[in-house]
Length: 613
Image 1 (spheres, rainbow, N blue to C red):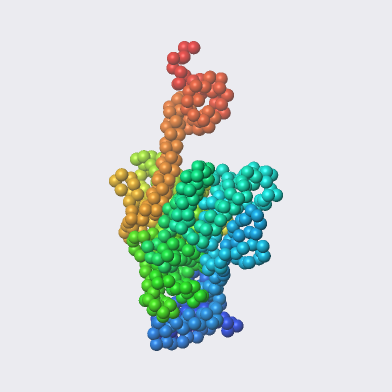
Image 2 (image 1 turned 60 degrees about the horizontal axis):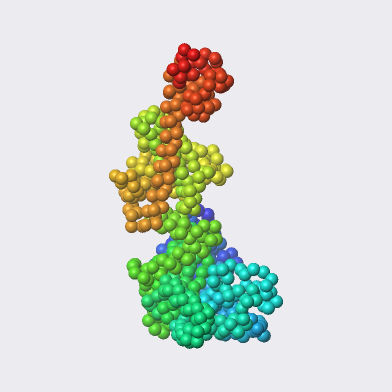
């Protein structure tokens, strides 16, 4: 610990055990972080203790702290209000800062004869007509996309009538999402009628539009305008399909926000779903650095988000808990002027909405690192289940395979970002003893693995990197047989076993001190099962390969004049025992290290009926 850190910790230990706000400053006396605490001494002293318990963001902040100040308050609630006020006033670098970037969006209708419908952020075209403004850019964009799709309006860059007949219709025409005016076969009056129906849909909603379209379809059918009636019928069916799709993201609570946080240990993201009238009307992704204390981060985010001008709904649903939930409810209720409820649902539709929100946050973080949200989400669940400090991006798994102690081998498989990394797979032949001892075998394999790490750690790849997690195919005995190696070599890698049931199926994860049930966690269960199946397949495949070669060698060494060396050369040259059996005498004589007498002995061994010849 540096002298400055020791000095700051000593000062922090002198703070009172009272609620208040602490203010961190750098060398230039600039405020870089503001926080609140129920007990100032306990909270502030944590920053200046062991830095191993902090993530990278906190370590950077602590390294920049030159001094800190504090303000005592009468209650934790007053500390929360003061903290929000000071953050808004000073905008410290390491606090979650959300700008009030809520602009206005418009529905733009182009001013030419062949009108187009767009989503726009500014009124920058004097010839166009604008409908709005609207608060939610997400809602406007979604509605315009829906209208263009339902009424088969073009969204390409072609100009009409200049580009009539200049190219084939695009894919949207073939999947019935565009009427293809580019062909020159669509009447302007019919096209403009579609535009008007789309604008009616945007202004009146799907229910009113369905009534109008149904009436027009019936009228067209009575007038024997069957083509027009069929086109109207297709639009009606498209709106109904759209309505069914929207039910997936509807809420039983008319007005609420759903908030979730996801982090892969390096980057994080807050996702906000906003519902009005039970329908998803807006969503926001706010990227942030990873936090070592998610509950405190959730509280800080909520206070910042609703202090930035965002309207406060009656209900806020969280995917994971926030620190001081009651204080947040009181703070937001006073700010809104009516009761606000904060819930963390454990089951039902609200739980599914919260999980969907978290999945979207995971997808955003995954895209930043070239992964999929599903893979990242299951790794996060595994990390939480095992109590890991970070998401296990690089996993190694080991299994032992032998038959009554013969051909004792091991296999190592690697999963990177939730996917098998087959180029990193390794095979081991047990060298230090003969016989069957799975515990000693696993100990030997992991010892060799660690020794290879120290030889290649400067390379940072393959054996030159340590995994984030090791999974052994076995229970507590396997884990306890290997765990002393970490103390011996001074390493710290999470180590667990994969326990099977009587039917050789994954049942639980062994920690050495007990078992962790994984069956209730479906995605984690499937993921761990796939790892266990893969490492077992790889290890037993290597064992069968060595056993087969051993059997081949033993059958060849039964031939007079053929020892282990010549048997090995024959197998290498002919590749299989079948090829050796079918080889002519001349071919055997031409093989490396073979004499005429040795070749004749091999030929006679496999062709006893040709002895006289």
